Image (tube, rainbow, N blue to C red; front, side, top):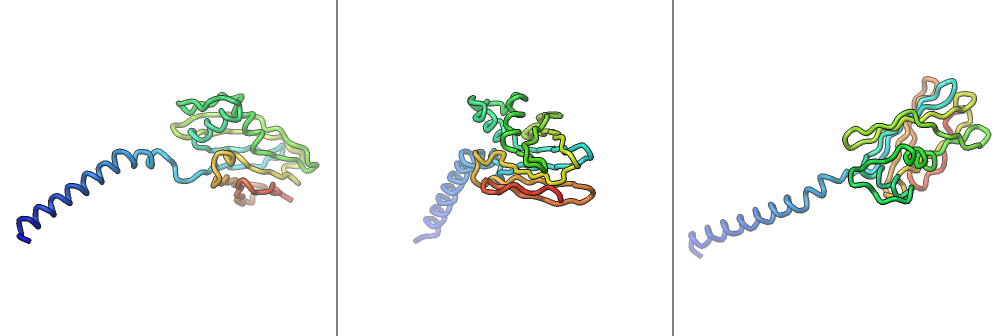
Length: 175
């Protein structure tokens, strides 16, 4: 084969690769870039003498879709979620039981949206600042099988991290 033919094939193959790469970047990559690769919520739970404060971070698209489904609605295109639906969803999926085994109601202390995230604040009144309290975080586990919910507990100066999945049992908060 002559050098000219070899050079023409090389240029042709390089052009095909560029077109395929461009098509991949144009049609496939935007979907990948829009999706977050990890399915998680992050909660910082702080004990106080009167109870617990939970500060929860969740991705807006997944969270609003799940809250809407839980409320029997279609997922909104703008990833919005009414506060009343958020409170019902969180109370059903982030459960807190006091030392006697009774369910403790979580009261909203703030819901805000910051770009692609929801920041949720909830408080619970528990006697004896968390003694015997058990909690379980099943948020978004009905949406993603690989959902992992991280709860960083700050209890009487000690810190520990709890991980919850769909199959996780409730965890004891403190002694």
